[in-house]
Each structure stands twice: as C-alpha cells, then as structure tokens.
Length: 211
Picture (cartoon, rainbow, N blue to C red):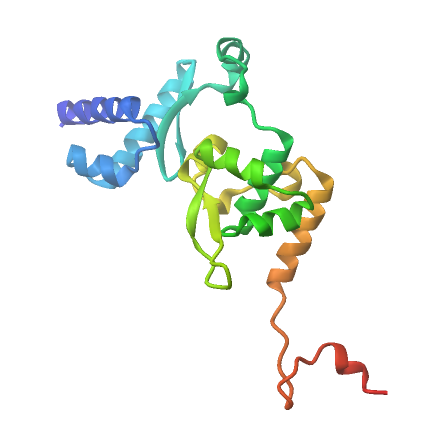
C-alpha cells in the first residue's frame, strides 16, 4: 500500500510538472487509476510538504485544476529573471477591458466600448492574442456581433479556480470611471424588466399621468 501511495504521488508530481495548463483532479484520477479523493489528498499533502520545506515553488489549485507556480516569497528574484517586455505587461486600457469582459461576459466589442467610453478594439485584440479572452458565440440580434468571454488561462493567471472567485471590482479594475460605469451596468442587469400594462406599454415613464 505504501509503495502504491508513493507511486501515485510521483505520478501526480510528474503530470502536473509537464502540463502546460492546470490539470483537473478527475483527469489525474483517470490516468493514475485512483479515486479523485485520493488525488485531492495527495495534492494537499504535496502542497503542505513544499511549504514546510521552504521550496521556491508551490502546488496550487487554479483554473479548475492543479499547477505549479513560483512561491510568492521568491517574486523579486523571478521578476529579475523574467524579461520585462510587452509580453509580461498589460496596459491599463487592456486591464480595464479585461475586467469588463470578466464581470459582464459574454459581451461584444461595442458593449465593452460603451462601458469604457472609448473604442476598445485595440485592447480586445491584444487580450485575444494573449489568450485571455475568446469568441464565445454570436449575438442573436441584428448584426450577429461576436461575443467574448474569458479563457481558462485568465483564471490561471489570477490564481482563481472559477469566476465565482473574482475579487471586488475596486480590487481589480484600475480606472475609477470604469468601475462606476461597470457597476452601474451590473446593477441595471439585476433590475427586473418593466411589466407591461393593459395597453402593451411598459409602466415606466407614463406612471406620472398624461396631464
């Protein structure tokens, strides 16, 4: 039993090490032929072991699976190593655009531009090229505009397991104006649709009477 457990631990480490994206526990359970619960326990044990030994990396759950990443305590050294070129940074415009897509997805370029108050074409193209957003469908309305949503890579970059784990807007979006516009838009989405009166009209503007 001990030998089988050690072999499973090695298998988990090896699979996560070579994977380019977070590996789902269900997939590892299938490959190693052990219960999902055992995979989860192994990952938790490995994560605790790495932390106790002061390793420069850690095993974390993100994007619906497990992956290795550098330890936050070693961030300064990693920054020295990583070339600080365009590929390592997103502009504030791109970050604002990414936040809008994350909280409102799916939505079109025109909808993003309306919330930001400026043309978001360039920022959307950058995010798509970086693999952070993708075309998730088409708007059924006139023009059938492309609708965009965030990718699993987006969750991985933020270290999140699902969209439910997104932080409050103020912690994520750099622009105050964009925060206000996005929050207003989200509140509008949450309002119930106006109930039609007997004449087939909404009960909104004519509630004050016809005088």
